[in-house]
Image (cartoon, rainbow, N blue to C red; front, side, top):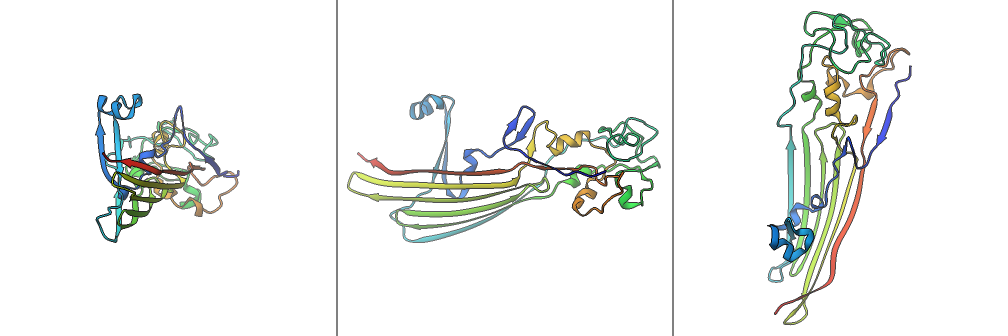
Length: 293
């Protein structure tokens, strides 16, 4: 048989879940934020109208200061992340629906129990041996120990890392900020790249008149961002139905697996999941007059 690799390109969310796309607030470069103010109820509605009846969050970005001299600021931040809590999984029974027999052939019910997602099969860690998905890779197609892997979900995840850099230049009433960040998620092969440019300036035209301009450019790009909800493309949804005898760590290098015999597909999971994002936005004000009385 042919081990087909299917590529799914997903954008947005559906009734069963989907991609958790970044919102507008997440676009803003944290190094450009000066203050964050929360306004509640009537105060918010009085300033921002009916849509602000439940409150608003006001984000004020940094701007130049005419009283200050030329300055350059360089910031670098590194953030690492790991899951705080993972679900509990049973480790008493392996894949299948027969408590006495299991035999992997093609993962599509060609063997015994190999087309069953859930783990209602033979007892794990009881000294049993069966032909499994990786038998062709590790034991020339012969039976291998039927054992549990209690940490297979934990071991599937990476340590997430986010590296961000920002350079800002301020001279009098002018400020220029350029930032970028590259994030690799805890779910393997997921990532998000961001690039931002912020420009602001002000000029006092008279005793009571000040002209100002503010321009912010955001660019976000990802070849694969995590999918959430009860969706087949969400790895954690798949963990609920996955076989407890499978060591997911062995699947990390699936691209390097040797070709298997025609009747045996040497992979537990043959779908490549991708959810792509490409987003650009430009926000700004020009020739904005500020009157002071």
